[in-house]
Length: 127
Image 1: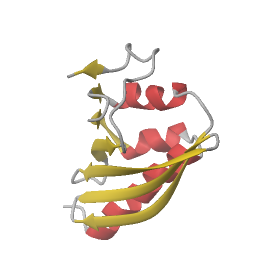
Image 2: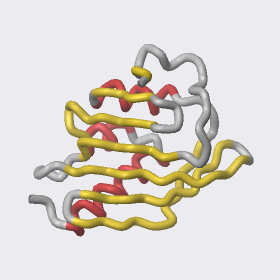
Image 3: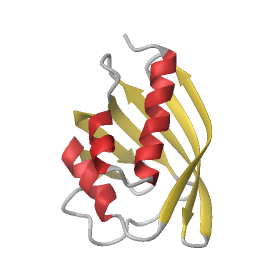
Image 4: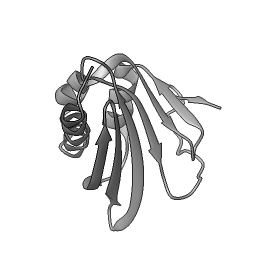
């Protein structure tokens, strides 16, 4: 079983790899069958390669900064400051880490529901 400090470290590394566009590092943090969900857009991505590709292709000059991390056992919650150009917002991210310390489930919560931007249907399923 993964302990709380390892889960916290995985959560911080997750955000850091996204912020620095370090796709090999991001890949190394995820299970092969990771599931990524965004309830506000009702989108789900299945699998490490699709999730990494989703982030590689995500448009705009976006940046992430951790405001707070809470970890307990194999679960972590992140409160993030998100910047896209001059626009700022907050997001909450829930992570589930498996017994090997890899992230197996990611749920992003954004402040408002919205329709997903075009161009990512090849990576996501809607519910």
